[in-house]
Structures are given as structure tokens and as C-alpha cells.
Image (cartoon, rainbow, N blue to C red; front, side, top):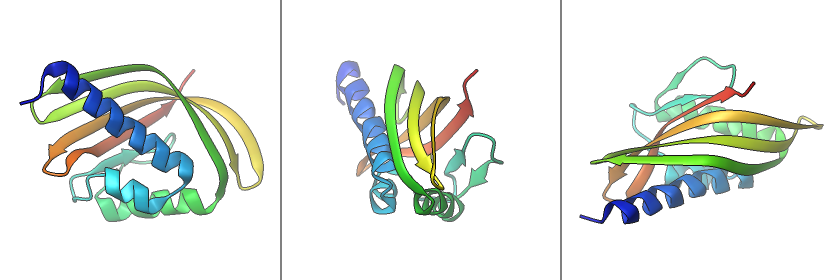
Length: 131
């Protein structure tokens, strides 16, 4: 078993891979970091919850197809690891060009990871607009 600090660093790295895939608008990279089971969950800001990888994948594909630029500055990262589950809370500062419109906004996010034989996988992403 890894030390607690090594596990926290491994989860931070998995979290960064999620944001790298998101920023690259790359569905293949997203699929590599995500739990692709029927148990996975995603709540985009202002959306209804999406359950199961097929629904989640379709949402990411739709976002990526309509986005020209997505840049993240992730702040206030807090990581907790308990056994085979871990969660990251953070603030996403996002600059984007979506359907030709540029915007900057903040999002509060919780990312839940599960330990798999392939490493930590994102099982749930819940993002809400910050005030």
C-alpha cells in the first residue's frame, strides 16, 4: 500500500489528467481517465445529473464539438483518500470560447475517484457555478 502522501499525489495527478483532457477537448483522453461503468455520474453546471458512461460521454462529446477553447486554472485543491475512494474539491477558473462566444467564469467542483487496476479513475464529477 502506498503512503498517504503518495496516494494524495497520485489522486492529484489523476485530477490533473482529467483537466488536461477537458482542456484538450479530447474525448479519447477523457475516456482514459474516467470510470466508464454504469455507476459513473456527471453534473455539469446547471444540468440534470447524468448517470452511466454512455450518457456522460455523449455530454462531453457535445461540449467538445461546440467549444473552440477551454482553459482551466485550478485553485484551492483539497484531496482526501480513504481506501479505494478519493475525492478532490477545487475551484475551476475557466476561460472558454463556446459557440463563438468568449467567457470567463468560476465553477466549484467535486471529483470523486475510485482505485482500479489501471490506477485512479474519475467516477463522479459534480460542478456548480460559483457565486
